[in-house]
Length: 303
Image (tube, rainbow, N blue to C red; front, side):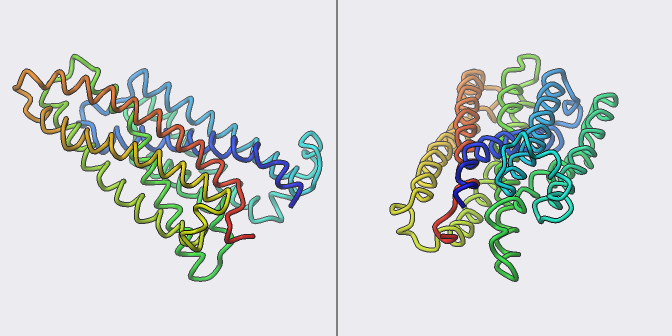
């Protein structure tokens, strides 16, 4: 346990980088397929660059995660891990998960290259990105449970990260679509309305699954205030509440104004929503960083 604690900062950073890359991949693709009008869902320059960067970050962080995990398991320096990697991949649950997720990342990369030539993301690429993100549930605390509890906990983790990916990962393209002055007002109104519906569903799913996950990791509400894990979770919940307040302002204050595309205030509302979307994205990055720390720290229930 002392050895694993030594590697906790590295695990936290790598988990956050990998999850962040996977969230951007899923969110960008979901936004293009489910939110934008079909004729606007092409892979423009920014979307191509974001997808490429996110795939690279997610893949490199996943490879580095394997190195650190091997070093922690064998209690050796990470430079000494190469001869041991094969055994970890073949003989451990983490190794099996690593191989499956590596195959998913490679397949997704191939589809993204193909989509770049065709000019639009495909449904299989969205599904693969979702599988990459959801399968993070099998590389975390949910593995501590088996049987029915294991199924429920893994499913809750998978749905939690998928909802977070669809919501937070879509904020960058949402802000970009609000900035595009060449887009017609009615097209922007449709985009904002669809994103609002998507965000509402995602928030409901995040809250519901978050309660289930907290029940498994904390066990009792008092663990929020009497454990280091609980303190981190409280910070994350505080940031989530702020993001939720910003999202509520977007949905209930600015979206109706943008929907009245003929009004002169629509352009002002678009600018305000764009700035709030960037604020949400920044807070979302902080939440992902905290999630990386939470995923690497031992929860009270496991002690």
